[in-house]
Length: 136
Image (cartoon, helix red, strand yellow):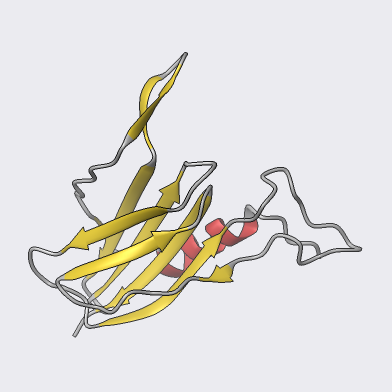
């Protein structure tokens, strides 16, 4: 079996995507796309699982050239621990896995911030990140 890069985001969604969708307020610098209009560099979706008191964030950095910083500010229910934090990225957006190089495109551990009321993630260029944040 050969796992392509799309396998990992789907795997993360199946593993961590249980609970209630969060209504997040994301502020990000933007860029212009001729047929679409203004697009934010950073996009975030989140899920809260009341059973485990955990929050999962799926974070997209569309910037092709540079890392972006994402600061999370929790109004209530701040996580107490960062569980899993991984990113899909690489120098070549067109890279893919082959039987000769089955691990060319795989998730990389991301330096996770400390859990608390304010958390800052350093997002690599053109990356998709999952952050599993555990509650009490």
